[in-house]
Amino acid sequence: MKKIYLAVFLAFSMGAANAQISEGGLPWSMNLESETISSQVVAKVALPTPDYEKYAQEDLQDAITGAAKPYRVAATIKTDITLDDGTWFYKDNGDRIWRAKIEVLGAHAISLKYTEFFLPEGVKLYITNENQQQVLGAFTSNNNSKYNVFATHQVQGNISFLEMNVPASVNLGNVKFKIGEVYGYYRGAEGVQHYAFIGDVPAARPTLDQSASCHVNANCTPGMTEPYLTAKNATVLIFSNGGSCSGTLINSLGNLEDGVCKPYLLTASHCDGENSRDDAHYASWVFQFNYQYPYCDSARETPRGNFTLTGADFRARSNNPSFTDRENSLVLDILLLELTSPIPAEWNATLAGWNRRANLAELTEDYNFYIGFHHPGGDAKKLSTANSIEANGRFNQVSMNNTHWAIGYTQGGTAKGSSGSGLFDKNGLLIGDLSGGQGGSCPDGREFGIQALYSKFSTAWENPFDQATFPQYAGRQSRLKDWLDPHDVDILEFPSTKFDCSDLKDKVSVAELDDQLARSIDLYPNPSSGLVNVRLNLSKATDVALTVFDITGAQKSAYVIPSAYSNTYSMDLSNLPNGIYMVSVQAGAAITAKKVIISR
Image 1 (cartoon, rainbow, N blue to C red):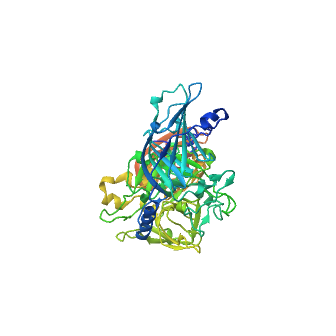
Image 2: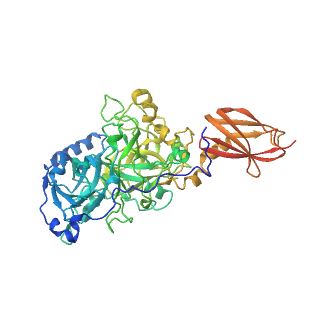
Image 3: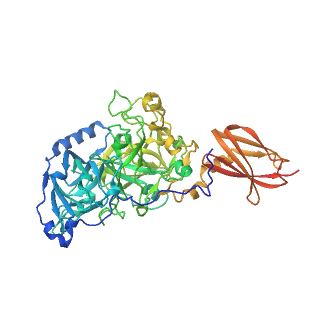
């Protein structure tokens, strides 16, 4: 059995190196010495104008039918843009500059998906908007992925300039570069509108279907106080294939036992309508952190938080749809991913803890406040609160009861784009992710969710429905427990932690798993003449290690009880002299200590 001691096991390997989506800097064409280059005509890739009216009609139909889909914010344009579609310029020292201009008429912003992407060491890629007020990059070899794909976030306006700086020493044949999809945003682009200058004057900010006036900014009360501040910092905005959803970074017991801090992320299964279980499918998903207004009053400033990472690996999901003969049917609605890049320290992200109790609705004295954080309509982060939940909810199906928590909001609400966001109990622990709900409207007439259904974390832990209905997808790829409790400790709550798990040891030292083990073991007789009985009543069969130390801390004896469950075992300590001894007891990640006295 793997022996792990709380005092020494947290040697985390995750650092901040190579984590950021870009390293900053300016493209060579912006240098004053390169004015002749910056004034050169750049090849334009004119793309077809999307049929925005068709998109609007489709979006309306989805709203009427309650289609379980991500919230579409952008038109998708299939492309085949390579280095052959741009213009090359050369510096006197042999360095090369590639530039291209992409235009999508009618778009409020543009983002790009690269179906081929590999930059050799030294090559840098930048993207700017038309007035060069916004600069993304430099993207470098640090952004290469094992699948040679990539994606970049929104650039304001209907024109984007691309620039690749290639040192003379780089073999151009080693560069892989193809843009397979261009996304023209017709809504959900509020966060980049402050770059829309005309000369030195900010342009009028269009209404891009941002969230309704009834929504409450995340930095309002109670989003500024613990434990809700931690829950807020675990919430991210997701962009994939022209759509947006919300998600929650989540903690795992594996972070405790393995010493590697894994950034898992929970969102809704319907946020990926392709029902994929392929890592490469998620390699171009973009995750945006801290996108929120700095104050409760959104009129004071524009939203902040242009912090993004690209790429995730698949871990588990509920099948979408749940009934193959019924479109949009969902018994459970969970998708678990693992980010492929470490999270930079300065982003102040957290991994949310969780509560998988199934009877929360009955515990009204202990659980009388709930809060959710989300990105409605791809907008800046908002909060919603409720004072109670009901256990009998279900979403887009009538066959399986009690799969969702049902709530009525007392503050704020949700909307399309909030899907996948977390619902937290009064202790800031995650209990479910948003599937959808019933809406009303604000005084301004905009759509506003007043009731909601959150897929139960407690049910998704085992996901019994998919185990029986989709045997080809059964097991660890269909449920949460294998990833969030990989060694089967079987506790009901687990605490939140910092992005790198650096404070997890302190939290876990008083967590329920230790207390539960302490309550499940007894040593007798005590004092003993040498034969000590070990009485155990564990929740499940688990290997148990017992190590005996004297008062100086010297180890005197050690035992392992394989597959211990509910029984009494014996330790023969008759070879030890009279005295006081400490017995360290470890089962999985749980550890406790008992005192025993040897007296003859």
